[in-house]
Every structure is written in structure tokens, then in C-alpha cells.
Image (cartoon, rainbow, N blue to C red; front, side, top):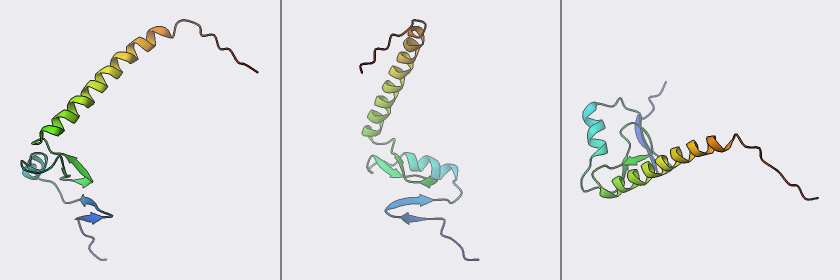
Length: 90
């Protein structure tokens, strides 16, 4: 049986299935001088580089949207007690 490569690139998307170490995991998410997206330490694709300020902006926007969704889910549950009238035009 032939050995398959544990890391590489497929259709321009990086992959890495080598067993991750703690040092490699930490250094993958903190790479000063690199762009906002860096290769994942394990798996397929890219991840956020936490050394880049744009990544923190993305995380903040995602957290705000999540918080807004949780708040709107609470108000939707309160409105379900009332009947709803549906009008259908022929």
C-alpha cells in the first residue's frame, strides 16, 4: 500500500493531517507579520491569525451577531402564544 501525503495542497486549499503538537497549535494561531488568514494546524483550509487586528474585528462582529440572535430568540418565544390570522387571496 502506498503512503499518502499527510500535508499538502489540493485545488489551492491547504490540508494537514499530521498529529498536532501543542507548540504547533499555539504558533499556528499567532503569527505576527502574516495576513489575517493562515493555514490550519490540523485539518483542511484556513483559520484566523489572532496576531492580526482584523481577526479580532471579525470575532467581535460574530459575537455581536450571536448576542443579537440570542436576544431576538427570547422575544420570538413570547409572541407564539397569540393566534395568527392568515389571509389568502384567490
